Image (tube, rainbow, N blue to C red; front, top):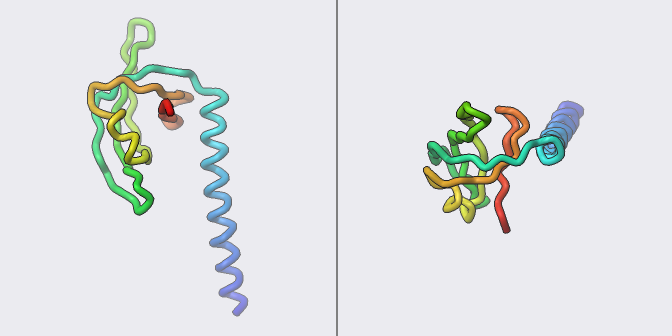
Length: 107
């Protein structure tokens, strides 16, 4: 019985910490990230979840001075936002570093 309680507590605390880390990550990107208009170089559908969202793998690029900057990543996006993320389209992003990118969609 004690083992079941300990495992349950660990699972609940782990879930809460995981969700909290996502909120902290997004807040950090929103407050410290730069606004950039990037071009979608490549986008692939990786998976779908039950909530109507797509997991995508993408490659974005933009100009920084004379150089062209390219970044690859993965993210989960609502199905209703997918038409805005087509190859060749320009998207607004908040960029903190290569591991911290947030898509900005107009309502």
